[in-house]
Image 1 (cartoon, one colour):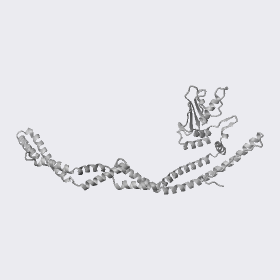
Image 2 (image 1 turned 180 degrees about the horizontal axis):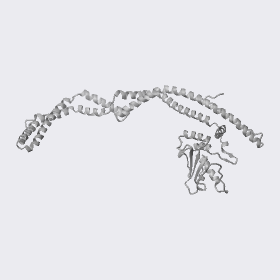
Image 3 (image 1 turned 135 degrees about the horizontal axis):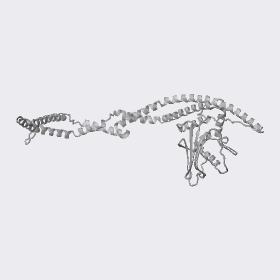
Image 4 (image 1 turned 45 degrees about the horizontal axis):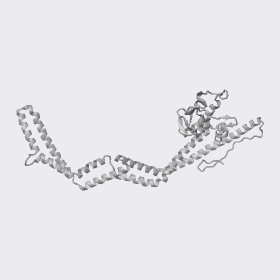
Length: 416
C-alpha cells in the first residue's frame, strides 16, 4: 500500500508531499489541475518511461519518491526480490522507491536508498502498484504478472514460500559446486605450482630474524683478518707497549701507585686513588675480553661461502614470495592450505552433488504441490469468471488459464 508520495519539479508540480491513509483514496479536480500528472509520476516511479519533458521548466531534475507498506501476499514476494538483490532495509514492513530524471536525459533509480537498474524497479513495481485506465489494464496485459494474480486467488503463500526457500538453497549449493568444479578443472596445474612453492619454502626452514644474524656473521667472517689485527694492536698497546712507550697498563699502574701514596698523606684525595684502581681493573677486564674475542675470530672461508649461499637463498625467496622472512613463511603456509583444499575438493563435490539431488527431489515435491493448487484454483477461477460473464450476456465467452511445461535438464523432475 502506498503510504507516502513525494513529487518535486515534475511537470507543473513544484513540490507535493502526500500521505495516504487506509481505505479508498479519490483525487478530484478540474481538468488541468494535475490529477493525471500525479499518475504519470507514479508510473515513472515504478519503472515507466522517464521523459525529459517531465522535468519542470527552469529545473535541473524531476524527483519522485514513494513509501510502500508491505501487506498480504506481495510482502513475501517483495522480500524475496530484496533479499536476492541484497536490498533489505531495517524496516522490513516498508520499501522505498525513488526515481530521478535530469533534464539532460540521465535517469537514476533507487530502492531503499541504493541505486538499481530500471528493470528491477519494474519488477518491484508490478507487485506494488496496478494501474487501470481506459482500455488499459497493465497487470492483465503483462504476462509476467499473471502468475502472481493466480497465486493470490489460490492463496498459496505458504507452499510458495517453502518452494522459494528450497530454490534459494539449491542456487547457493550450485554456486559452491561451480566454484569447486572450476578449481578442480585447473587443479592439476595449480597442484604442481603450489606443491613446488610449498616445498621450496618448507625445505628452506627459515627462521624470523635469521637474515640479520647471517649478515652480521658474514661481515665478521669476511673481515676476520682486519678484526684480528685490530684486536692484537689493542692488546699490544695495553700489555706490551714499545721500546719508546711503556704498556698502558704499566703507565696506569704507576698512576695508581702515585695516587695511593698521595692519598696516604692527603686523605681527602682517596676518591682519585680509587678511580685509578677502578681504571686499572677495567683495563684488566678489557684485556681479558680482547683475548676471548681473538680466540672466537674464525678464519673459515668454507663457512663464509655457506653463509653467502644461505643469504642468496633467503634473498631469492623473499623476492619471489614476500619482502621478509615472515612473509615467505606465511606464503608457504597458504600454498599448503590451498593444496589441502584442492585435494579435498573431490570429496566435497561428491557431498554437494548428493545434497543437490536431495534438494531437487524436495523441490520437485514442493513444485508439484504448488502446481496442483494452481491448476485447481485456475479451474475455479475460470468457472467464476464465466459465471460473471453470463450475467453480462456474454454466454459464449470462455476464460481459461493455460499451463505449459518447459523441460530443463538442470531442473527438478516433474510428474507426468
